[in-house]
Length: 82
Image (cartoon, rainbow, N blue to C red; front, side, top):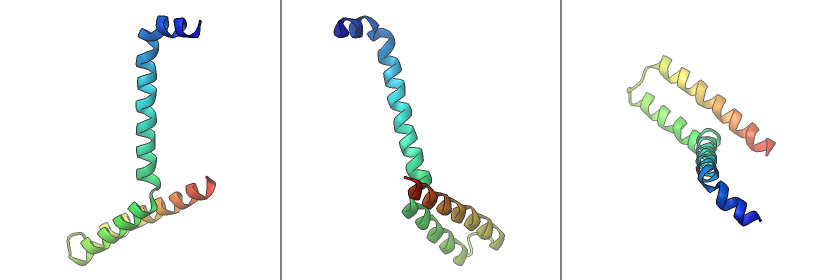
């Protein structure tokens, strides 16, 4: 009976399952971007290099550094909660 039900509901359930799978993949990518400590540290290093080369102002550097340090704090808290 389960196979018959799957076949009958396929036109409706397949797109829904596909959309859910895509949403899960996007969620994983977003979480990896937000909570990846190595990536955040690399962004901090790149930011410092850009400041040292004079590509950005001190105010921009301080603001971006604060944002990245906050993201690093959140990433560590997220990892500790897992």
